[in-house]
Length: 130
Image (cartoon, rainbow, N blue to C red; front, top):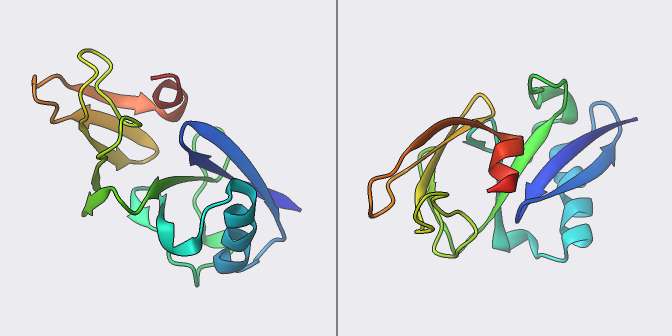
């Protein structure tokens, strides 16, 4: 048995899974656990939209040997691997304005707030705290 950690609204939600299990089955358990309908969220793995037909073994691990998937609501806008949130869930740590984030190799860069602040290469743990 292994697990995939989903990060949703700043909380880590571990979901146990069998080796090689299809992501659509794992996601079903996530939807129940966080009480969100399937058509209300995006799931991103390594900055890319998650293909539900992939299996658990195809999800890359981070530097801490964990499989992490970021989850965003559909009322946010995704442009390639950049996400703009209309809510206050993703905010600039300097001025508290909504901002863009870019996700690459499990590191997050914040930019695009109206005051042009930028913070590069945040780890997921830093992102959770901000």
